[in-house]
Length: 633
Image (cartoon, rainbow, N blue to C red; front, side):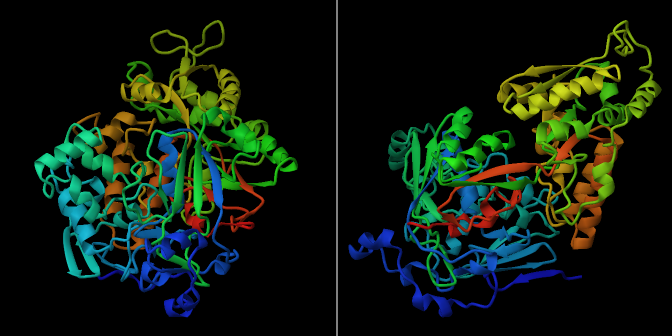
């Protein structure tokens, strides 16, 4: 059976064609001096012949004017990656309703979920004016992905189906194709991801750093200049797209970094060759410059409330909402509340890989995890910590997802201390000490330690209540705080019993998105870190999952990876969600909580409400910040 997904136009709303809008196109005033000096060609020569037309009005916005500077705050230098996420320029991306759409590509075709044909936009250019061609795809594929020195661990898992990569071919001067022998439905989601697969690189620029194309003496001089010990380290440093620290690296994003780190602020300027225009032919982005000020994470809320940011979501949380809302009285700003996309704003994760011989079988007993869950009074937590604005729920997908099932949200999430006590008694934990704590099989009192990175006052407030809830069923809970790196290291060492973190990251998935978050697939899943690293390293590290349910989750994940229909993928998702819910691998508490988004009163086209999360919405990314504009610019 041949399943073909075919997209022919990179438009939002197909009413407008390129020739209908480009006749009225005008150059941004920001670029006028360079155009007059002959340093830049006019707009018609900078844009692709068929640019991507964003019908701003169809998105509920208003076509705007170019110009102005937008200020935002970041907690550290590495957070300049937010510009890559916010800019959300991808070969294939998500629309606001989370369907795939071509972006950098003019169109794409998918056959049987194994043959992917990409058509480039004729005349599309990198930010330095060099053409985007199939050679840039070939370079990334042959000279990076398939270079053993640069990619010593081999192709990324997402590019391997049964350990075999695709065949790459250049079909014609504007078309490339990737073909697998069997389906690879995970390819498009990874192209649309926040940290997208790097399938294309500016080859004309990057070849100077590659041993295949550069002579050894020049390469050594470049290594000395950029402080790299090996040519491979040099190439990786200069080609980093996700965290754009190299101002010289050509980009396809709406803004390009102009600041070499280290710095106290980073200035991103409009990409003069960006491929999107609005329905009036105005080249996007509207805003000329984005200035990212580096600040201490602890004082970002205070600086935001003091009028030092024109657009802020990173570094602020619901706990800051009252203070930020009050700043509307003093500064021309507006604070909106968006819905967080996590399966649970706060989740408690019993570690299936805890190395204590007495506690390990207890934590792996589903009755214990269910008892912990139903002993928690989620309503009290919602009212006390989230002012009743969240939704009491297990850790599962949100109603915004077509995969939502109410029974998964309510599963083992009702407050029932009597049931919790019965479950613990059935396990053989009925005896108690003089303080009313249950006794373990070796005679110890049931004292548990939960670990936190200590980065959120919300976590602290929640734990104060959970300590009381669990004490009522004979379990003592103590909190240990450590730095994030130490926290992660201890988890991989099997030294953490319980941890508090957020729930599943993508609470608004469609069946076309990978369900790997529900199975042990990565080392940072704190409910089973050793199983996750085992999967991630193809068995070279960690421990193989040894419970029937965890193994079934991995089998279902593999089944999703070979599926060819949406119906098959949806069935896999539902089966995995059911197991995840019934086994209570993650004790979710409250979801659909709210994220403050502060913006200057001058900023236009920022939606009043939206879905806020890393994957798949890229925080603000799917709402196209390149269409935001400043009224007095």
